[in-house]
Length: 374
Length: 248
Image (cartoon, rainbow over all chains, first blue to last red):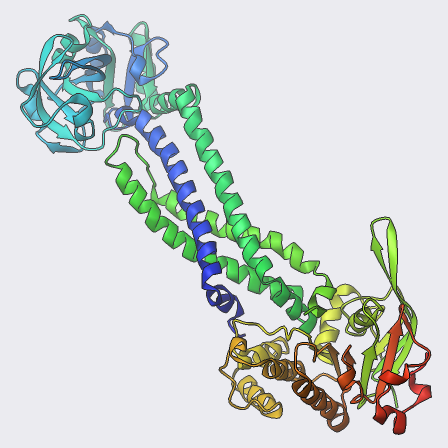
């Protein structure tokens, strides 16, 4: 078979450029919007997901990680006494105020953990170590927020709620969903920075012993420790995600933008592919007159759409990769996991072929007079 | 001998919302193999509709159409492409070549529809190009060909399927008179030397005389008598055959 589909596409370079531009625009729009949604969702629960814990113990009615309510740290010892608990550590997550050298104040979230344990510690350290937090007044912040916090280099001194703070390390990519960056420090120092009582904690993180059933350990904790709730890390992560993404305007806005991105992307692709097919309507009419069955013509149209989809997807993902790369340097993360990238290929293919199918209807009902008019 | 094309009492009515337009009103016509017939008449008279019905692109509202002895007017829509493929070759006013394909590939496309591919298709294409005097134009794109050359490629493409019937819609309209005449001469050769039934819709008085018969359509009917001015000399002198349908 002469390569009609491929030749049709490449013959008119302007039309090809317009077609690919439309598909690339749609791919980038959808990837960026969905990536933002995934990025925001992952960001909201990043602290929980990277905690290294199996169970989170909170006060009653805590809806998400940023809204923990302090409770007596004596419960820690009760938890440690329960069989199946390999390790249990206190964790503080509280909003407080960071004072920049220029006197401006920024809201931050203090994350206080035991530096002798891996539970609740920062990840992706690019400067300094967790051990450095054992030094006096030591804190670690993310390099993304250097400018926001007025930080330039290690060793600089700042004030958090009237207490001295010294930068001893930087992480990379630990974003906060809110406008308040995370500041990691020791549990003891976090009590000072956040203003909770010396004998209180906000969370207890539990690592279960190998071979123990998570739900069994949870039931044991609930039976032995009063006035707390126990969540698996996955549950608490989901609660935090659901709170931020579905009960706040910010999350809903991102979700709506993602849906809108999908719709607009589909419309752009549909219009582009439709126009490309309609451009060749006379040729398809000629094919019909020559005796080609609908199946033959559908094959040409679908092949055209599929080639456009593959090229548009490839170019779109290259552009998306640039956008995603640029976003890593900013406050809003666009996360494109592999399954999403692969899913995007099939979505592009479906959109292009689907749009081609819409135009097939036009080909099926071609006016024969059109074939005979010059 | 059985006619290549038989049209009996064919009517065609187009529905346009609540109103309807009748394009053909009881047309009777027979065309034999080896005959070159010109369909003439004013715009909107129904020539193209008749060509479309003979070409199995449109179905008649009523009446019977038989091609090579096979009744096609009762066939279902999805059966018609096969009839077109097996029995009919089309030549269009605007050539309708695929601009993205070379002249040779345009012809090979028709062969592909017939299931002829590879070396055999290539050889047959070259043979067809030779027949229409375009031996060295296999790799030329339509944009690089003159109007006359394009129409020759279109004729070669129509012949690729080896059809018994060739239908041409205003094949000379976009060509100058000399080239137009040559194109009709090629079609005349196809009819007379190769036994094809050739039907040409034309407005062009310069080529009417090359037809074996001129059938004039007016208001959806075959006119009783062609005006003197449109009767080709050859038609007047030797090939008038009242029994074969100059007059319905």
